[in-house]
Image 1 (cartoon, one colour):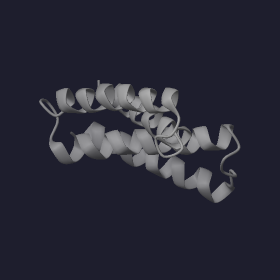
Image 2: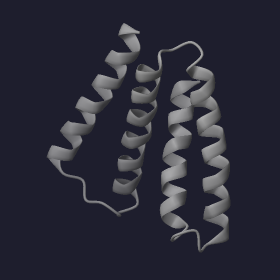
Image 3: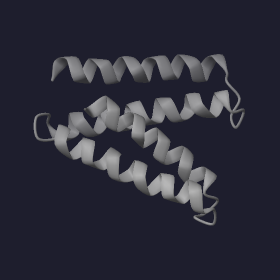
Image 4: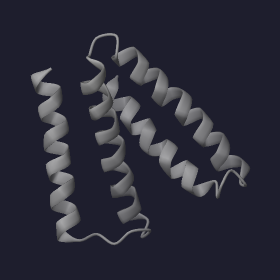
Length: 100
């Protein structure tokens, strides 16, 4: 549930960027839908996982996928340093979930 909510957080961020300040209808609607799904998933996960851990995993998954999406779409240049930092971020997210 929590990882899925993090995926929708990445969709939310990409849609927010594509909405151009909420001036484009389809990305704005996608942002609203993804926000509702993401926050609902986070809320459900927080019933079983401590808030700090749930929030860290949610933002870590969302941030990692958002950066990867920006690499794929060419909005951001991939570098070795960024790749290593993303690997460290994913490792920390996994670690937080494992020790929960």
